[in-house]
Length: 253
Image 1: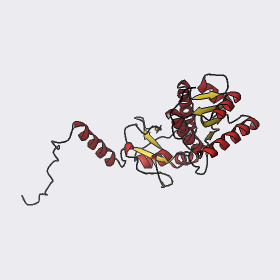
Image 2: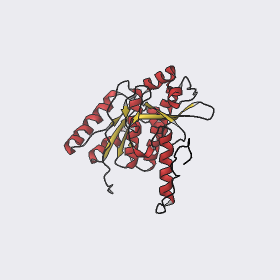
Image 3: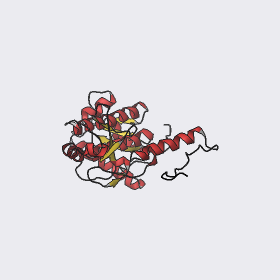
């Protein structure tokens, strides 16, 4: 070695035993680590850029910068580029906009729209509604007080939905019955009131829906996760997840 020169490590060579897919996975993981983020698929905790609290990815919202520098919410955690994470709460997002936390987290000039918090809530409502629409198409939803009451008698209900602006009497009657049934079965009784009568109706393709019931299924679980995310976003303090029922085989009759 010549004086004044530094020893350098030889370039890494591909492992001949690795498949192209495995080499691609390693490359993607290295790219995320280089930018201060781990792969979204790892499921490891992230740090809120505002509160510095460590949380699971499901409890936060990821943001990236568009090519023009505008801050964009990445609700599916799939957009490319460096991301910044915030606790999934409207008040946190509003504070981040005011304190320019996005530029610090993204390490670049980033412009957050003044109404970013409102836009995110609109997106979360749409996601919950879209999932409910899919569940309806899959035959997992019953609507109307009498139909929901009948479904409860059959013991097939996994979750109840009431419009946020629905009359209390009908909701309480169905809720008491549902909770009693689920208690006897040793199961949770998830009840969703995050959507308005019109929002539920829009998802169901009807003018308005006050009461609905969901039977067990993958889309029911997905809807409860989306509804829980919306509830957490609107709530100033942390609230528990809506319980997700265990999917059970559907029976005919």
